[in-house]
Length: 214
Image (tube, rainbow, N blue to C red; front, side):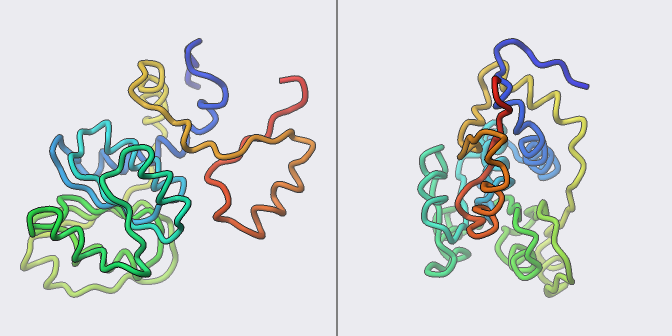
């Protein structure tokens, strides 16, 4: 159990879990001040990773995300650039924007095996790939991409001990999680909200259902 400070709203506390996932992934990646970071996927976990990477001091923060609305939102919270992977060679563009070196860290927040495999070829020599998305199936990549370029691949899942850290960061004003909350509805309308999300999962990041009277 984590005590909620008076200056952290119940709404923001409700998204502490995905924020903790993002913080844990960035911690596992060892993001340092001045690092260039590419985040694959701009969904809830991708946004949480972006926010945590900003706190860690990432200098260049790039995101690969196919949905225009999410790219616009990510630019609004301060990412360096957000690319549409359907129209852009993300690997090339990030390579050019990082002095033809490549990102120090690539964090996959999608869980899509093919994208996880691509991440290994995108990160710079000696860089780190962190797999934060929970997916299914096998990931394929050329072993030479790891061995010859001394790249590392790390999995990340646990976050329980990061929830108090997230609350503390929100309490001190260093973490603004408001971008994660894209809808607020009464609990009585929950069934309709779930139907809406099932029809269009890209419509929201996180939705809050509020009991009447609260």
